[in-house]
Image (tube, rainbow, N blue to C red; front, side, top):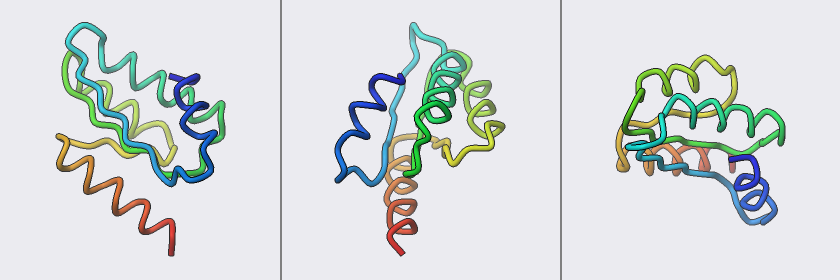
Length: 93
């Protein structure tokens, strides 16, 4: 997760990140922990919206909410898209 975030954030034109995970095999709580760790270690300052679906989804969302970071959990792709657009627009103002 950290390496992917580094690559994405190396582009100065990126104003927000939407992470979409369908964790059929991989557990959502592990993915959420990886996202939180990556955002902390990299010092990400742009909005990050995470859509999780699959095994341990509620635990994963709770990890995101409890992180104290500006990582926004989403329910479904439509919700995720709306949240990242709103967060980026808010950041531009």
